[in-house]
Amino acid sequence: MYKQVIVIRADLKMGKGKLAAQSSHASLAAFKKTERAHPEVAKAWEREGQKKIVLKVNSEQELHEYFELAKREEIPAELIRDAGHTQIEPGTVTCFGAGPWEEKKLDELFGKLKLL
Image (cartoon, rainbow, N blue to C red):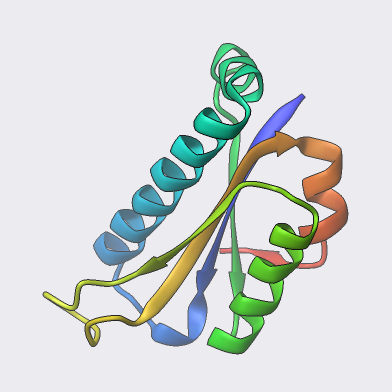
């Protein structure tokens, strides 16, 4: 079983629309990275229904710590920086997407985080 994890910075206090947009950027970017490196994983995830979970952290530092954890475990992950057209400053790191990847492994790495 595969799933994707999206980790969002709660400290930015983004509006619902901004959260949805940033989550979508993270999901698509991480999926494309997985698809290039592990096409069989991407295909399996699509067949299984594209399970996703959105989690939160309380700071940019915490976001980077979890992002680096995913990279160390060789899980395809993409960090998202905002363009700054609306609510936040250009270049602000807002979130990242990891996977799709093995659900069990993602739970081990991100299981302590709370749902958004």
